[in-house]
Length: 360
Image 1 (tube, rainbow, N blue to C red):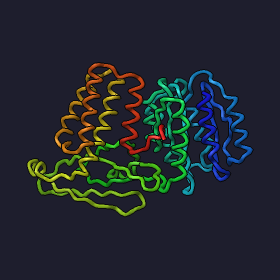
Image 2 (image 1 turned 180 degrees about the vertical axis):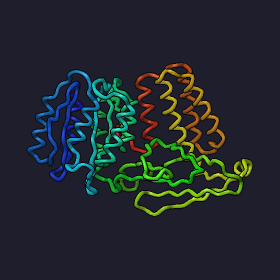
Image 3 (image 1 turned 90 degrees about the vertical axis):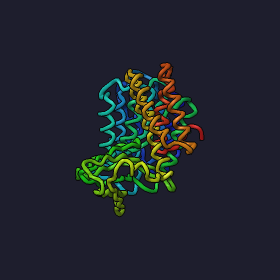
Image 4 (image 1 turned 120 degrees about the vertical axis):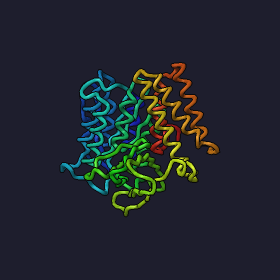
């Protein structure tokens, strides 16, 4: 608790008078100990004094605590956002959501809604071994933020400060990628992002979130072409919202022609790595749900597929070996709680190409 309070203070201390913040604490009850406002020296002193009074208490009203924090920093007018501000809710917890709304998918959907309506992103910070990574990871993905697994007290302050530093360097806010597809094409998002509803049923949108200068992200989709005959064409358009469309045309061909086509090593590299990270998360979800046999079978299927094109890509071959090791871990039923949390963190952050701030 002392380290968590120190980390919260370290973040507030880095804010200037042009920055605004609020501070909310929660257990079975929720309390706003610092209302939203500019971070003047006087308010910083008030925040430090109020933090010093916070003590560990009862259960965890995680959803209500998070939502109260979002309300505290939300725009005054419903549905309004400001293009010149970056707004982020940092949710730090060491416990389970056991008071109020507890369903991970429902809470993630709320995080996505808050991001869409108010522009407030959500980043989650899980401390120790008692929090639920199956809740915090989807919540951060839906909120276009980052999920952090903190293993030691020292990592709390470094991770808080690391993400805050990135917010100061955001150059593209709320980036959304769209794909426009004909009715004959069904898409599957492989990268660990969340699809967002679009006005047209022929369009799929993916909210990438805020990007800093020089940052690179890779989004991988699997496209299934239905009802096309050899020689028929399908046109896919893609864009970053607000930018011109890019167009790619696919021609249906026999399996033998597709197999003979020269593959792009760069494309297969990122396709393979994204598949590997999604496989790790999917297998972990199966294991956490009490079905290690299904997790083992699923990993085996992915390994066989990746082995078809992994060589001579050293990074892809390493990913295959990691999947084999993970498969053996599930076979021996020796995945610890700490290892499961680290696996979830590595899968989500690697797929989304986000930085590890734990050891600067």
